[in-house]
Amino acid sequence: MVRLFAALPVPFDIAESLARRQTGLPGARWRPAEALHITLAFYGEIDERRADDLAAELGRIPGGPFELELTGVGAFGEDHRTHSIWAGVARSEPLTVLANRCRAAGERAGVVMEKRAYKPHVTLAYLKTQTNPDRIGAWMAGHNLLHSPPFRVDRFALYSSVLTDGGSHYEIERDYPL
Ligand code: 2AM
Image 1: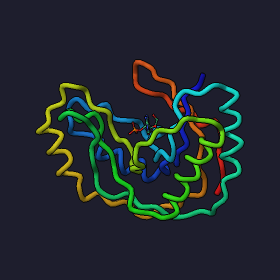
Image 2: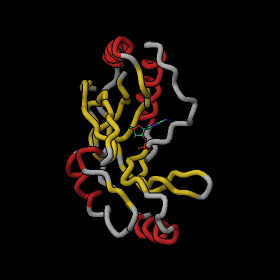
Image 3: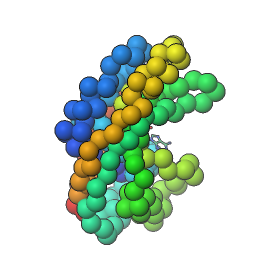
């Protein structure tokens, strides 16, 4: 079994400018620059054969390059517990179309996809349980005006994810030019 998702890697210069914001919040486990990405579709744990089918389906996705911008910050969490903070992605029709196609590719390969609404984002940190909510609020207020220059998206990738003690480790398994 392998844990897979399709995503757009965040270009290095954008990741570097995000790194300057990855500070000032005790309890945050900041994600390293090379791990920053925008998930298109999450496939979960699937067997190798289905993974091959999925990789082939992703290769059939049409589409050309487009531009994206990051804007604002946000947080995910349930029951008053925030578990991650992220940079937002400006609304983009080509991104929505690509994410839908990645989802459909999963369905064609027989992956049972989650119904969760698609919310594009770049996770900057996962937060330890005891992270102070006031500090989270202060960090978010301090970074709310985040706005990246536009950057070109000309490929997407199939990533594998291995959960380790130090956080999840991602590997690009396949690259798909747009
Ligand atoms: P996250 O960044 O908000 O944690 C690898 O785990 C990637 O897939 C991450 O970007 C993660 O989102 C996303 N992911 C993990 N589990 C998911 C799920 N159940 N549904 C949608 N996306 C998920």
